[in-house]
Image 1 (cartoon, helix red, strand yellow):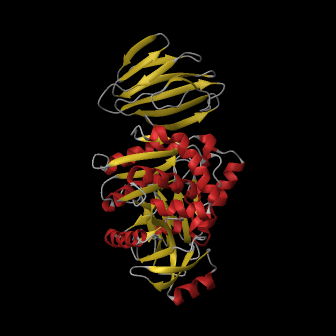
Image 2 (cartoon, helix red, strand yellow):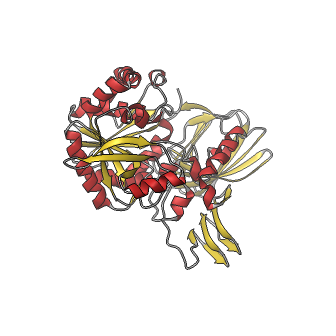
Length: 477
């Protein structure tokens, strides 16, 4: 049995300002409107042979990930489970926890197919063939990695040096770090070097035995974690939270460093599947067809006397005049302009924003919540205006604010409002006022999305001025 394991985490700092800590790269939408995570779910379902699809992600991303799984339409066809991490601990921890679950539920011989949620594969048939070959090797007790046939001397990827042929695939001589340009050209000319795709396939029993031998600190931390959470996994719930106290004992290390580079039982399946890790804006731009001057755009753009320019814009026209070799990323609250040769350095911007504690490294102007989303329309001293959209049947928590009052105006749909000791229905063109210190709740009892405008006023308008009393999404004690 093959169990796809989706690893969905990481901030994707090189794709700022679209990818941010609160809404990271896996949720980034491609030109066809599908997110990278949604595409990964569809790809996983195409090769799974029943059983389960397992997602390991951060607790903060659970509801958004669940929405993408629903859009993929595979939840009714096979079991799905989310293992929720309290914080990031790299891929070795995620793989170890997934392996323990698969071994217990499906047996030691069941295979895990490890798929990062932020990759793009444009040739599904070639992907399926590579997975079939990897399963053969995994059945022989090998840890299998996927090597992408390189088409350029890429310096942004690690490489795998392949050895001799096996029944399918090849042996692995070594893993090598991201090379400089001259070394990358040598690898390309040699013909036996492949890009390390970060995708793996192995039997649950095999990878756990290998971890016990080569990464005992990871294995022991996983065992302790699993012992604590095992009863909740056995309840057959759709999600299970990993306990933070035990999870904190995991070393922060990738599966590559912890195991793949230490084991002698490694094989690689070379593949040419139209793979991209979408690791930079340069990679994103290459997915778009260019005009005669090598200009590309996502959204509405006009290029005048411009060459080799990529524009990504979300809600307004961008025009360029007389410029060459630039990437322009325009979002509602941040603008990035970068030279194509410096796209790997965008992460430096995120580092600077973190140092300044600037919200732009973490949140967009539109922020997604389990119940829907809100968009900050305008803010200034003592006021903030939001557009709030609540999904049918969803509700915000029962809450209270110390420092701000709120005025709610319903634009579309019907709102069920708890305002202190009163409960009321508020329809379109109607409003209610909630003073600071009063307990309140907003719910959408209808079949259509509820849209309302919220006007906040007060001395302090930060999102942390909230005390939750009841919450259907588990966000309060």
